[in-house]
Image 1 (cartoon, one colour):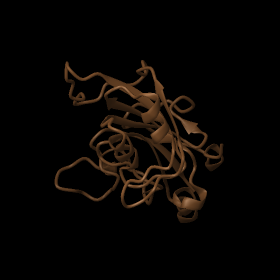
Image 2 (image 1 turned 45 degrees about the vertical axis):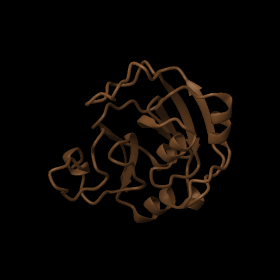
Image 3 (image 1 turned 90 degrees about the vertical axis):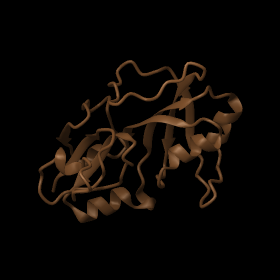
Length: 186
């Protein structure tokens, strides 16, 4: 059984099959018979888990066993106490209501690699960084949450899944390593 930790680069699709000339996991991983246990959209970066064990994949991805996931998010604008409180409370996104989460403003991470291409910058619009910890992970959830409170996401990086983080397992975009399933549990 393999459990692979991968730092997904920006604009890489979370699939192995080719897709109209776009970069996929196959451009970075040549390990046979592994599959993602969870996804990140192409515009997001950061940690993913992949495995060749169907039971482990199900356990990692199943809502009853979701491990906490930490995202650092660069947003357009500066959050106030009210917008942070809204992010942390159940938030109605139309097709579902989010579970309570942790959301705090942080300093720009000095350790973070530059994104290629860089995010758009507007001189008249400040940006800030948030750390958001979720116990769930719906499609484009973090982006939809920040937009709902008036702070559009410019950059999103998943930095931790359960007990595994970029701090404990430093990887640059496109790099991977094998980890033990017991490392996931916090």
